[in-house]
Length: 155
Image 1 (tube, rainbow, N blue to C red):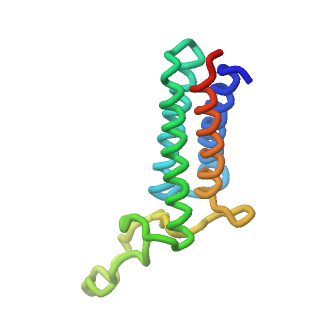
Image 2 (cartoon, rainbow, N blue to C red; image 1 turned 45 degrees about the vertical axis):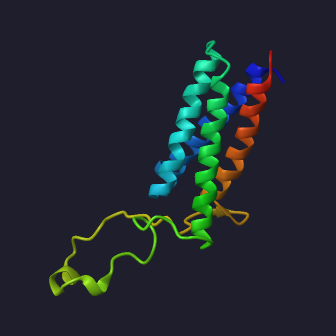
Image 3 (cartoon, rainbow, N blue to C red; image 1 turned 120 degrees about the horizontal axis):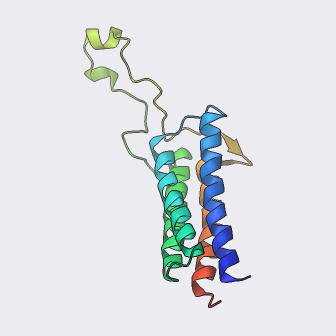
């Protein structure tokens, strides 16, 4: 495969993962958690890097594409581990919610609680035992390989 083909595949791969995430969110009704959103930013960067490379940007940018894909793969793997209970996640989006013991009677009776909060340690969708975060880690690792091949390719 040529360098341009590899860059195109890697760029389209990140774009597809971004579009898939937006599809799950807006068409499927699966609201993203905080860590899901973190995984989108490196994909967006990889798409921009790929676009610059495809119009003639410097070859070294392919390494930045690989880095972006590696970052989102890492976040996806970390997020999947949080979902499976292998390690703790950020306290701002994991756990059992509010500490009921620290609330007074008025706060306990209040209906002004957080709305639409999605917990990072709950799997809302899975396929073949992998959550969206797990699949992002797998596909992003493949994208890392494509980016590295593109960066090392001379033509």
